[in-house]
Length: 138
Image (cartoon, rainbow, N blue to C red; front, side, top):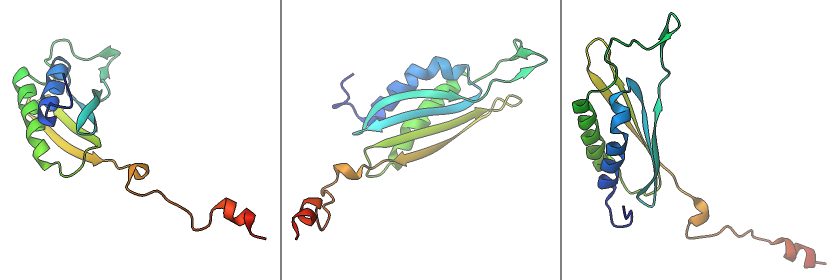
């Protein structure tokens, strides 16, 4: 995938397609996408802790996590949320999600984080008096 010519929306679509199998089996967590120059750098899922009861991890009989239809709706919501991103090219997007085990309903929230680097700005800090000028003064 050529990131320079691919829109951020298509990149986010690609990310969610790569993570779909993992999302389908996740009950809650956060999808993390790092962006640099409007291109996805790295991505992944931070899962909420796995529950255990009576020494057993998870309930083998119960369906857990998103359904494929919910994962597809989550992917579309993530793409649509990019319309809210304004005037920044470096940062992170965090999609926090959870599926209620008793109803099967899911919810998600989105957090944008923009990052700026002053060292790459239009100016460089120059002290009023350089160290060399102080040494040369009698």
